[in-house]
Image (cartoon, rainbow, N blue to C red):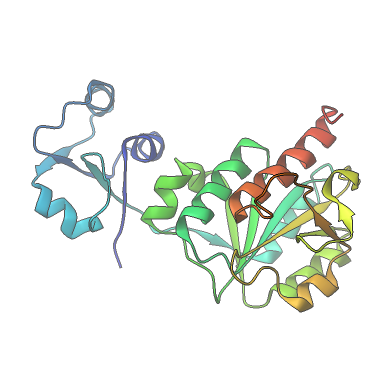
Length: 242
């Protein structure tokens, strides 16, 4: 199935490494930055009507530009583990049932900003990489490697065998997320907003950590929680944590 991405920032980020892509512009499109980029890089495009663009990507805020992109790449757990052999105590993320593409895209964006190079997802109860995820990630989808596995618990077992510590984010946890030692190989587990993290994954985690809150809202959405954990790990490893 053909995969389309849309939105000015997402498309511009993608085209920097994929100049042979097929580009569709809404009739009357006048963004000078993008038009100059297309001209400078000899990227062909064609104009299309609103209805034509809608046939490609649906009723979304495409901002007047759509690109046919190559298929999204998924990686194996073996590739992740081979990569981590040469890394100095990396942090990765595990997503347990993130079904909202906006949350997935936002998590990818935070991951890229905070040094998370790999994210593991399961095959089931998980939104795949798609145009909405790509747009929300503002291009991070092409910089953070996504590893798809059939069984998250088996993946966690393999990570532990390679000296990863598993940190699960859960409001009912027994340790403040700021009190964890992130200066080692860490895998941060983020669950869905509705179901949270599955019981077995919680049991297989080394830490079940909560984020202390003082307001009237007693929980954060998945992408906000992920950002706080990613930032704590990043700052701990770069010496910025207080």
